[in-house]
Image (cartoon, rainbow, N blue to C red; front, side):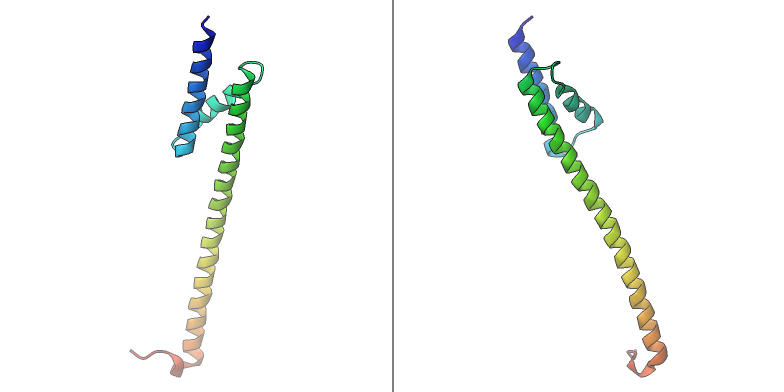
Length: 104
């Protein structure tokens, strides 16, 4: 077996996965490949450690993206409630203070 070629192919695979992840254009197979490469004892330790580090970065980035999407949803719901309150206040002002309402 040509160990040099084997190692180069493994690092090329890791590099390819990391490039896709860095560009944001990756799929489940890419992340699974990355986590496969992180198996110590099955792959060279330096490669497995690098793959594990990149895998942890991926997990943290995905967690942050999830948190941000949740926050965006919460802000959207809060905005809708505020707009509803504002409309209700405008209606009440027009009801109780007709002289304050703008004339057309």
